[in-house]
Image 1 (cartoon, rainbow, N blue to C red):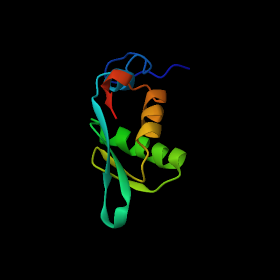
Image 2 (image 1 turned 90 degrees about the horizontal axis):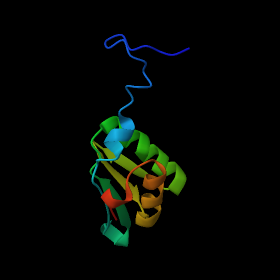
Image 3 (image 1 turned 180 degrees about the horizontal axis):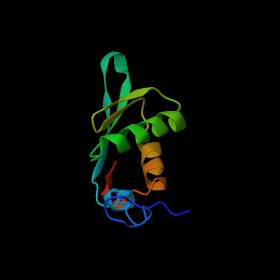
Image 4 (image 1 turned 90 degrees about the vertical axis):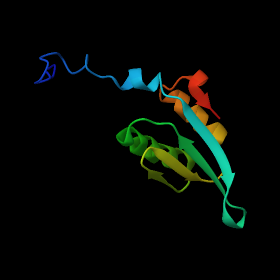
Length: 100
């Protein structure tokens, strides 16, 4: 059964704009050294906090590391910039807009 949006009356499948926003976001992946020679990977440039939380949870699970999400910025423990780029590409983000 197709779900209908109450406001527009259109099927909800047509109103999924998540893929459109993924194709236009400029994402920056940086690595920095913190105290005691510990590295941290920071993913910034995401527009939606809900998407950042979902992506942060997925990144932490796939990379087997700790981290946090602060607003639209994801902080991961360790050096993971290459792997983060691969995961972002698998999630539908465009390679030209990922600065790693």
